[in-house]
Length: 177
Image 1 (cartoon, rainbow, N blue to C red):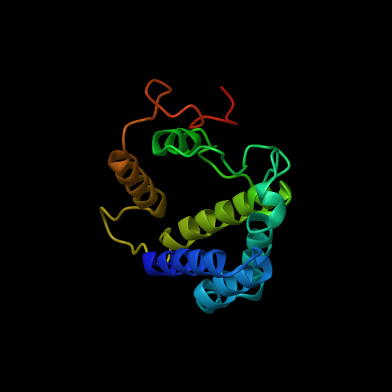
Image 2 (cartoon, rainbow, N blue to C red; image 1 turned 30 degrees about the horizontal axis):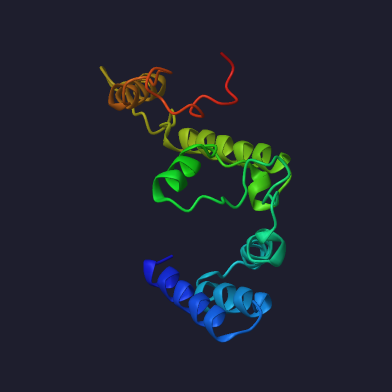
């Protein structure tokens, strides 16, 4: 989405809060979700997800002490008002969003990882040259040799291995040591 979408949403929020005696929660969710951002969302499941996220974040309960956006309690509206404190709050959020922050079950992450793994494996299979395409002739590389060369080239281009030293505290969260 564009910064202009955010700016318009903030402007409309200010206008509604300044002109109304009570906070028009439903109006805010509709204008921000359907008018400002909704036109950019085309998938029906994404539309439902965006509406759910707006319902969780833009509601009267979000102003009460102890309110959380997710069951773990990691995500909550900060009460900080100083920029440095807000930045510290944001930096302490988990670096990898868990499915719960989107209103999804933890199994959604498993499904995502399986789909990504399958896509990677399918890409490898599609890029592996077939025995028929390898051609004959003296000095011709076998499909296995070509794949090995490609893998070695990919590995050569990878950045250096991450270490815990100097990493964000959540960088290695959930990984086996």
